[in-house]
Amino acid sequence: MQITATTVGYMAAIVGTSMMLPQVIKSWKTKRVGDLAMGTVIIYFVNCGLWLTYGVLISSRPVVLANGIGLMIGFLQLVIKIKYNDKSKRLFSNRQQGGGLSAD
Image (cartoon, rainbow, N blue to C red; front, side, top):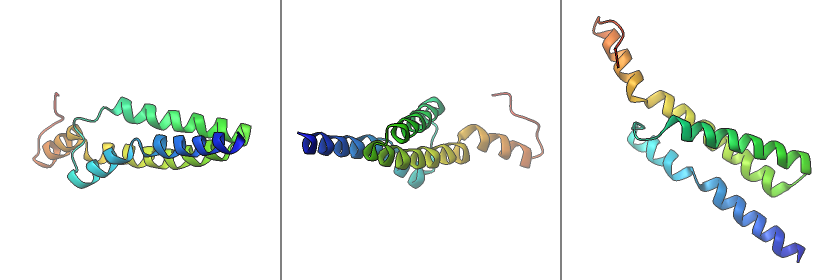
């Protein structure tokens, strides 16, 4: 029975970890993140951090592995979101044209 539980644990780890990966790939390729809510990215990142901490505390390899990788994926998505965010592009574009800060 333990082998089955471990197998299910690793399968869940793979699925849970890869959940944000398609979004990261799409954001990276298109450099568009306007439709991606910052809250989603932050919640995913914090969730992985908490699960990673829990996995370390209970010495669970599937939990640590999945959420360590998930935390890196979440961090990458956070960086991409900040870098390609439409508002920051408008702000910097407006400054370069000699205008002040944008009101939106």
